[in-house]
Image (cartoon, rainbow, N blue to C red):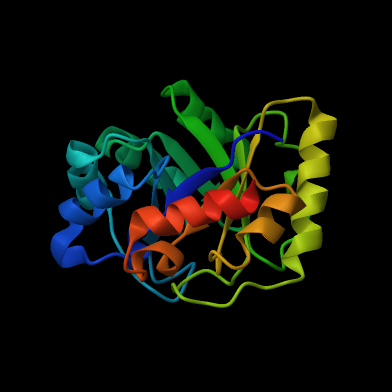
Length: 219
């Protein structure tokens, strides 16, 4: 399937040393920086906003993969793009006018992704698959880091990969939630080409060793 991309999620990093954490994980081999934005409404947690994205952009050398786990994402996508987002992913469950939001993201020259919660059917993508650049499958219920991977997502990832192949388009398939060195291969084998790791990287002692081990296991 080609190269597997590693996207460390700063949700699990040491925010008191955010610049160092970003530089360390990039030197360790990260392909992009995953930023989880939560609003306390769509998910039961509040994290960060455009100001932090803007600060991260000043020090990061890799693309910023911004995942909006928020209600009414259309109201905020332009602000996050202005702050430095390179990829903006919104949840199908949270957006009543998904086509319009995707169009805004792409009209600003950025990649548009659509994410689905674990229990959300892939059918939600049927009418937007021709417009998006990335599908993000949540393999935990979003809101908190450190959760256990939901094993029934294997089949959902496989079906998402099949849907992408049938579209005939070059769409990335990202998976986020509970991915660690031990299960990275099963996620990649199911069809993902972007793996988001939070605690699976930032709660290990040697980021470079961890990323190298993930790459070795996924082949």
